[in-house]
Length: 524
Image (cartoon, rainbow, N blue to C red; front, side):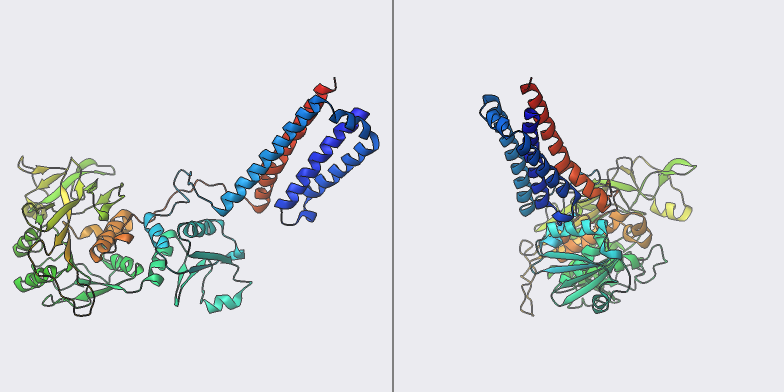
């Protein structure tokens, strides 16, 4: 019985040790079954040891084998202490690695830049059913990790009705953003919607984007028109831009940051082209989308002078249609992107319906730097029989038609001083721009309502082009996309069971088993 009593003493110490460790880790130790069970079992085993085997245990402590076993036990306790200390340090100074297949816990580059650039505290208040939403909480934690000024909390609207009224919440699963005196409510918060909301409340000055009218350009208001630009206008407004229209280009408004000309079916007048040219020479920013047979020769010459060459052609490429097999069509896909901030990080396909070629043409022109943004596949062709294709619906391919890859978009940066132009003067005391920027696409339909609804990356490309033109390179990036989450959702009870099993029960069983095996061998 003496030997067993000594074993009772060792196990009693083990149970008490894990009981105290559990009491330090759980919120309510006296109401926790694991803590109570270990403390009672440890106390009981120690009482049994004192009753039956104190003398034997004292003799045992003098043996060399016991000292070795005690040393191993101390090392085990030290190892557990190191694990606990490591977890504490990681909690205070943590770093996250996203090992999920689809990058579930990784924000888009734009979202990271927005969170990192915050100068003051941004308070996010999420109103969700029951005050719990693991998916939204994980997303908000990603923002908090990216930006130290981001604070968030989840609120049960039934428990705080006063706060609901104060923040003007009208629907469940809404996120209230507060930055200084500015506030905004995001309904059905996704990463894209949250980032757009943050941009809206943190924007000190709104950039103004003017779309021209009067030349047959795309409609800005009609969302039902597949070729319209209502979705593009909405996307710009969500990123804190102000969108306006301008009919006559005889003078560029003083508050204009970018002038967009989207698909001018009728030629611009020489006076309008002179206005655009003069505005660029003063550091202006122009976004031109000119499809086949659009714009007129004067516009083509104007763009050539600024480093962008419009082709008198239309790009065709192979298409695969259901039940028809492969054929040539006028909606080429592209996956070849130039090295430029507008297309940085682009890896997927974008589409360019009815596009002409646009090539960089800045060689020998001082101060101009032109970059091809997008090129079509090697299987594409630049068909020169444009009129035949539009009138008959079909056209023959000649050997003279250029083969792909073909450039369909160009970005131009013009250093005004290097061009020999006088430095622009600013009348409002602000620093005048020392460079002009120009973006030219061979089709306006790449950012039309239909394409933005079907090809998410087309919208990113359009917004990135605007961001680069206004000089907001810090916001130019691939925006968030819909990803398939590889996650395991657990209830609070399941999470608690996993904690006990991995942190407490398994290590305790291993140590207890080791003590029993060691004791049995030494007792033979």
